[in-house]
Length: 175
Image (tube, rainbow, N blue to C red; front, side, top):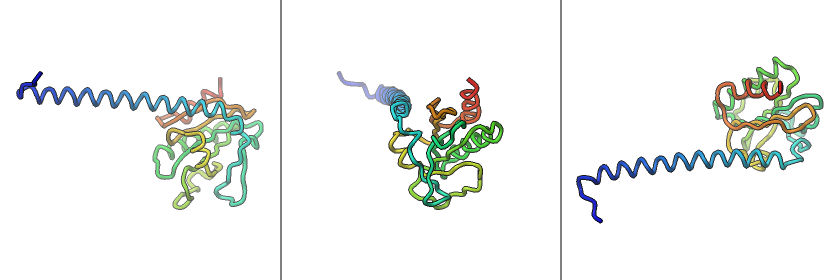
């Protein structure tokens, strides 16, 4: 069957719209699968709380999530170039200041610590998070994992929307 020339532009527009819809659907579906893989890898990773993290501001020093007994811990993956990462850190800083029972481990996902201003939120604990970020196959930054006072996994979140740090962490800790 041959397409008449006068219908060709309409055909191309219809094909472009259909292609765009397929791409958007596939991307959203893949993103949801990545987030599910991330959450599954956390649930399967029983050594995450005892894993040693290198402190960025104190060379030669390290810590683990299990070092913070009787404290809730938020392990947040962030980058210095991402505005959303800074917003997430600010929200987590606020809830840390208000509650007092939370430790925020700011896991920097970068090969080096050059050009990073750690004085912006000095109360956070800055650690090297690149290897854990890669091991867990975290689908993006900012992302965080919440652990309760006993070091048990509570919740994981990927991405940033207004309130996704403060509101969600507060509600999960109040459950």
